[in-house]
Image (tube, rainbow, N blue to C red; front, side):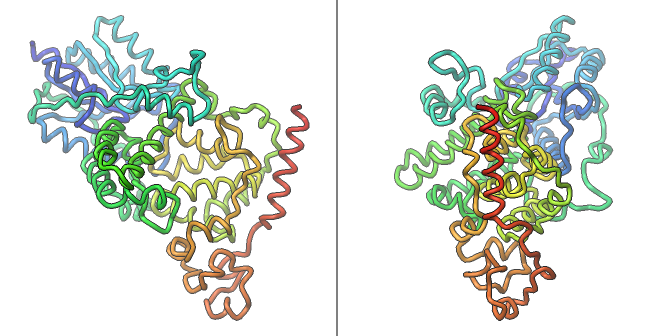
Length: 483
């Protein structure tokens, strides 16, 4: 086949070589391969990446370029409207085929549909694949033929339908297309400079497909047996921390499923842990299922009764929450972990979310926006779906009256305060009994710990019991108005 007619592999949220269906299809075509990444924040309804995501993307693209280089390919970087970039590159290279792995956000679906039509109208073969989900949103239907709205039956059905696809092994060396010009990654200015706030991210993460595989192997070897118990303990390294690697496609869900299957075959505690891990993987699919079928969930209350909820416009309260100065140690620890590492333990995400929505009565969308900017695993489906779960406004949501008490949650899941002491060092010398409620400690205990409430550590910004009653009264009035 003529080298004048390459196949373009359009990388997006699939920044890996292994188990990449689009790349495998390009190899199977026999054409020379031109790997392409388009930094597109100009197409309609494409949400600009947050700061932490941009940091991760820079390093992930750098890692992908090196991995592709090891196969003999050069990653081309272009910036702009995806349709225009592809149209120009096809004309420039004489490409006769473009392949990619699908994205499922509403804006991406609209963009990709238009791109596929444009290419095919021009006589260019265009094909897309599933490289990101266990089962795509349209593959799972209820008995009535509609989408699932509740996770547990969705999970049961997914287990019935799912079969991991056969692994396609690629040659060590791939056939490259002729070299074309592209952007320099550094010119995209994805990394923060003035100020450089990413020191904690650099300390916390290794980015790229190799790092993702290493993390998965370590988790399955060292932590999976204790995962059902430790996954709720922020004071322990009990979770996989694979979510950013999954979001950027440095590892695919099928790779995780296949690897976990070996633990399941071993039986015992490892099997239970692997099952719990796969259930979390399915929760990620479920959020994409909801977003695909109910795209308004990204920005609007899925339960429309919440449109009348009396949210408080409290910019100062939002800032205190963002900065981890609420006076509730577990909440503050989570928010400071987020700012430093670009990540937050899942149990703590629920607690800080509940505090913002229910203790402060600040709109969940304000919290979602902050997470979008600060999380390295910021994902539209998961971020919006999980915030609406906490708010009680989403599908299969936690009931609004489930209001997390940050003190009792801390005492249960961080019993000796190790997590709090790490991220709130002002409280490092507090005894275990008082570390989650320093305002209740006797004066001599505070003095011995070097804590001066209101000076070295804030007093609580709200009384939790009173805030809980306020939130429940607001919800009750909302229900009365909508019935």
